[in-house]
Length: 160
View 1: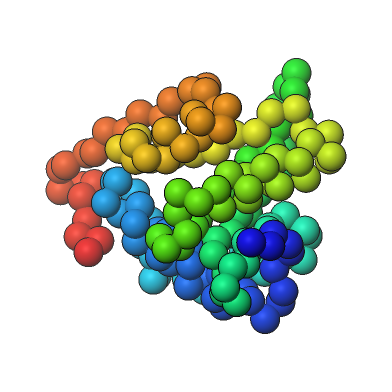
View 2 (view 1 turned 90 degrees about the vertical axis):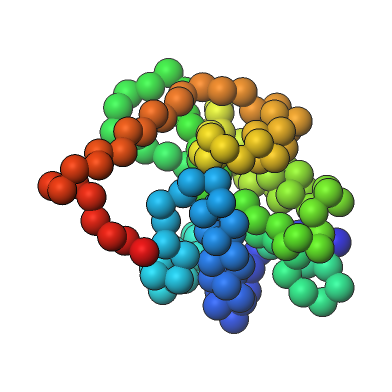
């Protein structure tokens, strides 16, 4: 397995992988609509590739997975510099082989070299496999987001 920066001609394939990631997350309660956001994520992935905030893992002449990340600017003065992993995806055929951990390690090393003190990642509350993965890689709960669905006629919409 080889980990390096994505090439510009790989952005469309990465967008397809992101759509697969978003589809999987629907089972865990995400509200993101995968296909409806494909063009937007392609632009975001292109920006990450240009700014050097992405890695891909290649195996058997295909992209096995990818990670995107960035240094954050939370708008407040803080006592640490923080980075965030936005997306980490490994094709099912390459899971449980260390691909995700290798991608995460590379992203963390890049952020550390940029002076980041801590890295955050959002995980769907119902995605127990992701929780276990990040905990095995040293992540601990830091902030919890709570959600309440408002089910009245002023707030509910059929979003299919």
